[in-house]
Length: 73
Image 1 (tube, rainbow, N blue to C red):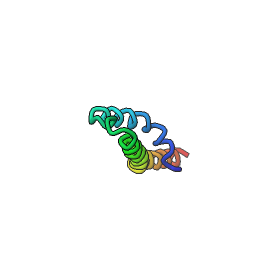
Image 2 (image 1 turned 45 degrees about the vertical axis):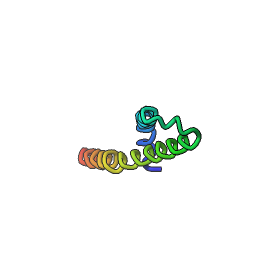
Image 3 (image 1 turned 90 degrees about the horizontal axis):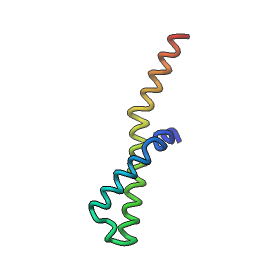
């Protein structure tokens, strides 16, 4: 839930990059099994990158901005 905005921001570039890598690795030659494996890995990468982005970038930035706004009030 908290990382949903990060997921919104990151999902398209992550999917695009990993699909290009999957095509370069010729995952498409493995049929349905390859597609399901690629989907699972790409889905997990999207979620993982969103959680990491939220924890390491978004959360500290929001805390910093809260501190700055409370100093001004």
